[in-house]
Image 1 (cartoon, rainbow, N blue to C red):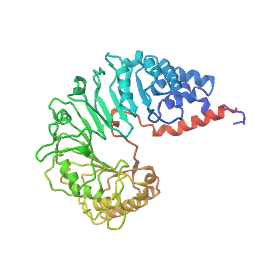
Image 2: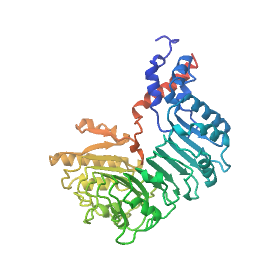
Image 3: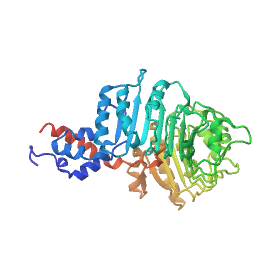
Image 4: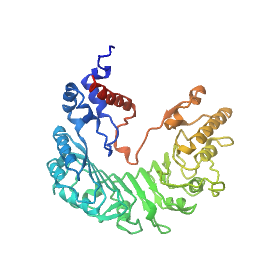
Length: 451
């Protein structure tokens, strides 16, 4: 290639260029411009290809407090034509949102498929909700409302919204008012994080979750304020996925709260913000199982826990021994940033452990400080299982473990553990394979402006 020749990546067919551009990470709230915007300014050919692909302009992030962002928002609305949209509305200043962006959106609300609203003040949120026309939004299936301030927003009135086909509602540091609206009864996914409204027996939210008419299959519940008297709890015949965030408390607190759930159809359970000693008490429990169908267990501290690593800490931890009576059908175990991961893995699979034939997958993403300890523990697990002529579970590992040469040298098959989100079961595409191509395209943009 001569010094004046364009980079080969600029010779990509339009169809491949559009496909690579379409597969990108989740909408970024950083100032970095999105790929479709960057590529539309590379050259006339790229501009024609990218601006002519309406689907590339359907993922929109707008700062409602900025007029410039509102004008860019209008351009995206135009270029997305009649396609359904994924829209994020932000109002992060203390001032009320400017009306310009909301006015641009009003004629297009009927084609919003996914709507995310991020605010710092209740008044800003109520302004946004009241600006949406009092007409049905038939395309909307996924609604997220995030309060990013320190002040809770409780009993939020969602009655202005007409959402006949919504299936997923996620709310962070805010809670809808009850009794539920008619469209809320059709939800299949409900995610209440940092919930400011206590979940108590006979509370409105408690009755909503446990009603026999609910169609919920996924529930994320923050139990920081949950109070279940002895003999009562959440009963659901429909839930298949349950994620629970716990508060720091007594060693047996995790088990006591989990015992409040009766979910016989549950197949996936996520336990978040629980310490290793609490987990050991839970996993060693001989309590009658209320999770007979759970095949997948995910344990994640969500980056919220500050563990004490000094000598003598976690003195209540007890070695975990398989099989786990509480989860008799468990076949997949995932440990994400969980304290005491090396010790727990060694207990379950290392030297002296009992065979656990039912477990097929072990997935791990350790804390940065524990990467080497986890790596050494997994090496010991491989050597122990081989010496006992026992099969290994499939390892799914974070990149900093996956790339080690030990696996190939010893014939151990490992898989790369992809990033995940709490409510990612709604079908977001995995973009990790395409990021190298996207990075090359950004480099090509810079080169193209210089040649």
